[in-house]
Amino acid sequence: MTPAGDETLPKPVAVDYLAAMIRLTLPLRRRAAVLVATAMLMAAALAAVAGPRPALAQSSSAVLSDALAAELQRPLTPPEAWAVTQAVRDHVGRLREARLALAARAGEAVGLAAETVVDLLPPLGRGPQSVEPPLAPALADRLARALSPAEQEAVAAAEAERMAALDPHRRDLARRLAALTGVPAAQVLPLLPACGL
Image (cartoon, rainbow, N blue to C red; front, side, top):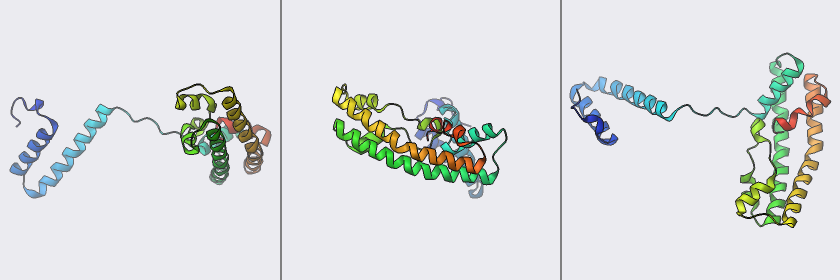
């Protein structure tokens, strides 16, 4: 039994007290089992206090697979789902290249390193969470000042250049997915930006 008032002891003292009680009262073989059980109970208590973990973002390929399945009105077959995942993976590589070019050009316009600009962009391949908002407000927040008209124009031009560079890749991805799934490319193309592609 624990002495009265033990609830107010700091955690390290309470844990040391518990370990000492286990050492004195239990044989060696049972100590390990009790310590493991105690650790699991403490972890469960901490998890209950911390609350539920946020849901992980769905990947762009999973979101796109769901959208294609909705267009087909049936689930994708395993080979179709695998092919969609591979096509998206290839496309994300092209997105990364365009993103780096955007970061370099926009960073040069406002005086920030390209790595800093990349950090302002949402992560790639995370479905709707990868949709990139306009870059100018994020740059202004990072710089803690309003962008000059020349900087705004340069950032807008860099974004337009990125979109123009991605357009042929998006069309190619839409054609590839159309060939894989049977969904017409004209129906696939509007799905891509909403999936972060």
